[in-house]
Amino acid sequence: MKKLENKVAVVTGASKGIGAGIAKHLAEAGASVVVNYSSAKAGADAVVAEITTNGGKAIAVQGNVTNEADITRIFDETQKAFGAVDILVNNAGVYKFGGIEEITAEDFHQQFDTNVLGLLLTTKGAVKNFNANGGSIINIGSVVSAIAPVGSSIYTATKGAVDSITHVLAKELAGKKIRVNSINPGMVETEGTHTAGIIGSEMQTEVVRTTPLGRVGQPDDIADVAVFLASEDARWLTGEILLAGGGVR
Image (cartoon, rainbow, N blue to C red; front, top):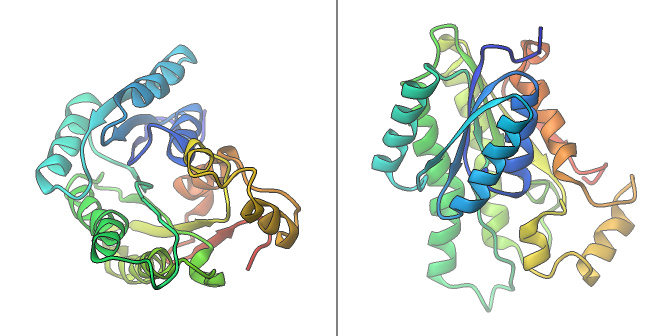
């Protein structure tokens, strides 16, 4: 029997990158997966197609995590397709780097609305739809909350908030048998980091130089950790912040 057989998972921001990798690995482990996306329908459909071609179960559901009506629809569609939720992965997120002289109120609200408010609202919606036996919430943070890189004041603040929320909700939801943990990746090679010009840049070179394992991460590196946290193998873990950055700290 597969590790996540008969489980239902919702992964936000799963049309590409880390979210897509997690969705595919959860499905490979036996879960029925809801691939959430905000605007990239083609990417979400491609993830679903790959999962179903490989014998898994998945649907794509549009929804912006900062909109409560959208979140309600995500979980309504989940219930219709697969039933109650066992696993939530709060992966949807945005980032922008720049010095203090460059930041704007718009930058602040964009990053905090998605990375913090979106996580809270999605978790609120999920808790109402969780299986009676509880389950696992996996937040996607970042090593920036530990290493505080220059030029990341807003982004680092959002991920520090994710760490704190993880600790609080682990205690708050324990009575419902819902475990809450965070995976905090280092630099990961994704469509986003390519588009932002990070891959192939001096920033990547510096990250590789300061990473003990000597490379940037891949989505699969993070997805395998997510499968572990979603499974009974992690039944005694809650409130944990797992740094997944090749030794960066």
